[in-house]
Amino acid sequence: MIYRCITVDDEPLALDKISGFVEQMPQMKLEAQFGNAREALAHLVKLPADILFLDIQMEQMTGLDLLAALPEKPQVILTTAYSEYALKGYELEVTDYILKPYSFERFARSANLAIKRLEEKTSTPSADFIFVKTDYRLVKIRLNDILYIEGMRDFRCIVTTSGKILTQQTFGSFEEQLPSSAFARIHKSYMISVAKIESIEKHRVKIGSELLPVSESYRESFYKRIGG
Image (cartoon, rainbow, N blue to C red; front, side, top):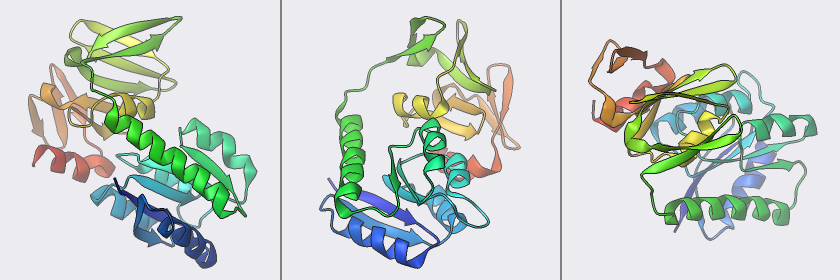
């Protein structure tokens, strides 16, 4: 399988270098390259990629800002000359972190890790339930019972047909666990079950008795999902 890649870096030489490395990987196709994060975000909202190679320190919009704004997160490999960003990158659940300057061998290790994760994701048979860590135990939740997930500072609240469950699991983790065909991110603080939508009006989704906002950054990808 060939995986679609995007490269983003505001230094032309660095951008040419990593784009050239991508083209040397037989399982990767360079779909586009960008010299700033804003243009990359506009492209990714319309056409999500499989793998994103992303510089962090850029003017106007940083790589971390772009990552936080993405409605659908690909496998992300951060590239930077500043090691102090490593911890923040892993908090955002990126695939890997490459410190500049780097060799093709170091790049290839990260690229192969991203490919491995993509292959594992597509080869794993889908289950009708997930396990979520709450307090000191794992709770089994059936996908059909989930109405929506709400972000509440350090916690995520899973609202189900039978009640609510609090967890510190991140939205990024849920996006990996839950099938994209059945669940959609509509806001930085909300992820919903598409099957549980009752109606949509004025960029608000009605699920049960709740009206949940569809934020501007998620609207295009969400409405495309539901054919609206």
